[in-house]
Image (tube, rainbow, N blue to C red; front, side, top):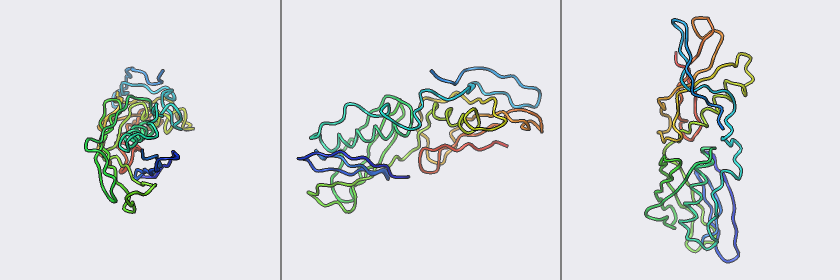
Length: 236
């Protein structure tokens, strides 16, 4: 998983570096998805219930302030509180959609070289387990504490899938045959193992999908092998 970085500084408190296998520095103190039914000729694939008619306005593909958690922890806040705040923002930046978040590291975060702590982030009702690991190079009393934060499951976000289907197969794709898109009704958020089939499907309209005739091609939605990207694999 690629690293992301940010920095906060103070004059009196040490700074902390976090990662996911992400690295960060902290001071140590209306939708275009519509329900609908589609008919089909004999032998053709029927349309799935949610029609995707364009970009999803609630999806923030480039991040931004909408995906920040406010207020920020106080400069002198406990280390674990700052870690939990960073985990909440990590989940939001993964989901790309604003949602209710919380985070808890029930046994705290041990500040010791190589120490591993377990945390859980809740995003729109879905619980994402995280592992937080202090850098092996950390020395007690150091002004810089480096650590990684790594999710242990993938996150399926319905609106993000709708957006990505539109970007890859619909009006945003530039495809000459782009016309109709449809998906299952997807959950707002659900945790699923990395590399697993989500059990949900989407479709795009093609000129030769139904035995050489126009029709829908169906795609299964899978969580990436390590990370939150989705893959769309054609069902033969």
